[in-house]
Length: 166
Image (cartoon, rainbow, N blue to C red; front, side, top):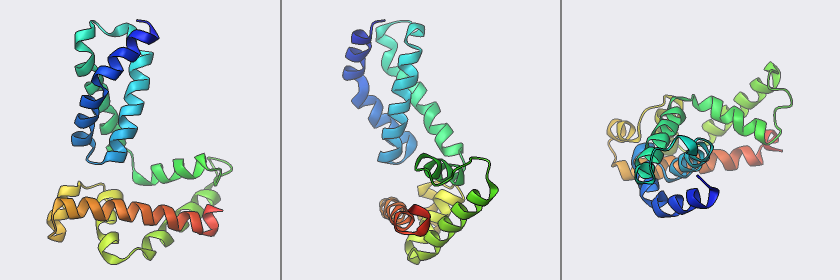
């Protein structure tokens, strides 16, 4: 398959697969990341695609697997990867650097207002679903999603302002 043929299939099916990723990943940002990774994996394996008609289903399956991997990855690993990407950890094996990052994340978590911290704790640290967090906290799923997104934003802002973030 040529890159032009692949691009044509992507343009035809990416919106439908993205909507599917939102349902599977539960977050727009995660769905965007999953779709981007799924597209890369699909492009690399495009010679394995049996027919153009199966592209949407095939890409959706790859995307579901990406979402599953994202959910199974401990949230601290995501934080460590974030820190590594930004050069906050000089040596991936450095226990000192890892301890510093964990301390910064703990400080950021402590700084969150309680209503955001509760949702963040349940969804990111305990790796529960948004629906489970909403039920446990007695709020709607929409409210839990909103609080989780806001908590993530506040954590990122706190890390960016802190000594750890440069």
